[in-house]
Length: 307
Ligand code: KIV
Image (cartoon, rainbow, N blue to C red; front, side, top):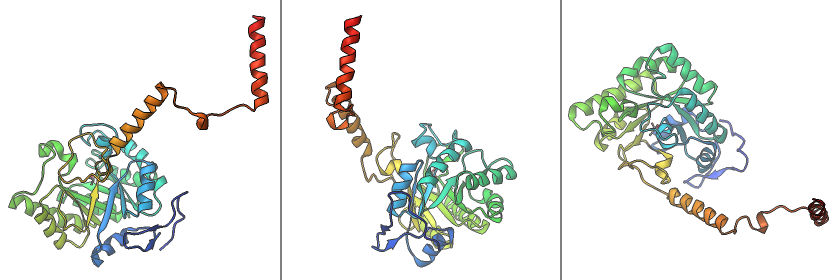
């Protein structure tokens, strides 16, 4: 496997196991991780600096999620985000990602209509966005589409359970698979996604017991978000992880930093420094050479006297 050049400033890093790790992560690597019982890490990113940070830290997969709609663009749900908007952010993340596997989420409306249009949109994410895989929400009903994409050499990550693009059909962002029938339906969905050829499967907001069963039953890695600890990997939305989400924080999210407080503090100190004349200081100021400064003020004096 190839060793990619590091983006400027980001060198090889120490993996949590202490090994130097610079190898590009590929789709087969993700499958191998499950076979070896190694946990898989995934985080969302929507811009270049975040991608740089995640990639340098050694995350296995970076997902440009359609959660972009909510956490970056300020919509109430994920439905309004467009292919063009997703592509714009995928390209930014691509520029900041060297090592991690880059996955782009196919937004609502980009794959539900004509199969040909769905394939064309997926191709755009690979060709124009630089994604190495796409994510598609839905289980059994997406079997044919996933199969078609995979046949066309586009790796697919499935997504079942709470699929946010179904928010209206589900009646809100609710935990799924809570009855025996619903749990069995999820297992059927998972098997269908696997049979269609997906290389991994996101399980969102489902009981841990159901996620554990699915994880045991399918060979492809399950990536949990609100699906308990038995999944083969875990994904979180970056803004939840660093305390930058403005909506209701889901029960499953863990905040590892409070960037909102840090950013508020930074802006408050800037405002106060400007108002008090403490910014900019000498160190942040450019000057003319003394001779030119002297001449400039001499000329200004003459102009004033002349008028
Ligand atoms: O859009 C997104 O961020 C996602 C993840 C939460 C899996 O679908």
